[in-house]
Length: 342
Image (cartoon, rainbow, N blue to C red; front, side, top):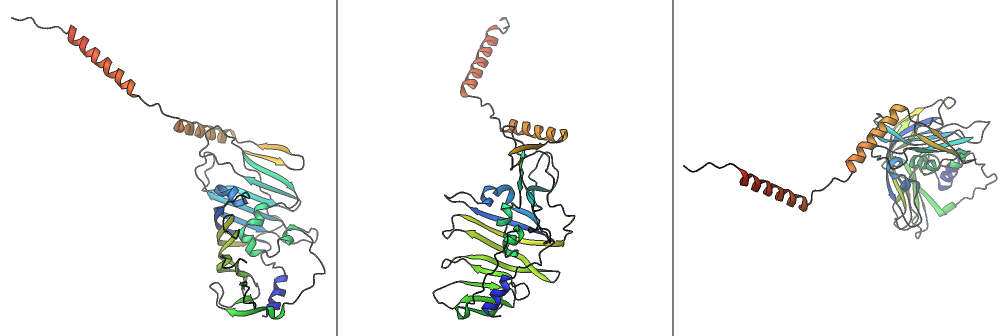
């Protein structure tokens, strides 16, 4: 393919991931800077490392959006009221009309001085902040605006680059017939590597600044239903100095078809969630069961006792104890009956 043919192919949105759910491991290195925290750095402990499922629906003639759901699980650290090995710690779901997001409050180290409620939010429309920063979404979905239902700009004229870009076949670690596209300007270090057709999926792209690391690095592909997906990959979203952003590594575990009409795009609130409806700022609460609340309270009491400062015996205490013992010994010696001499 010529560079312009490859660019034209990239302008056609990929759709083979519609109607599927992906399960994958995610590991995140988060970097924070003076400008604030990314989504991952703000929720690193419970929403950045673990196992995720990503479900994407299908287009419908009666709607502009596509429903989506993101669920994040981590190993249960020992929640007192939940026995599941994998603990749901974060989710986002939307049917396009309304969106829910949930963030769990971990209670295994709860001491009774903080709120015991997890948090949730209900928003109008297609609001998925973590969806936009998820590495698998970044690798699969070449135009997120299609998922969000944002109208595409019509009448965009394709401008051919001609001899400013060049392509060549290369043997990439993920695809032996990959296509490398680069500039012909020796002063421009930009290049990108794509899979061969039909996906023309981005395999490798270096950050624009000179000698920058790979922003996208797919090292292995998975085949499902005749199409290739990223099996192992690293995605970087960091500033040029490397001090702010996040680096995510993923491993795709499996893919399955879903029934988009019966799929649960918005899961129910877990017990103990306090959620807010954004349009009127009204708050609601899903209570724990009596048994769950009792387990939480027992753990909180045990944690508080374990963390309470233990009294320390001072040298003054031992001095007094020794003096008392000496006095008792003297009294016993003074009044102990003695035998008369013969």
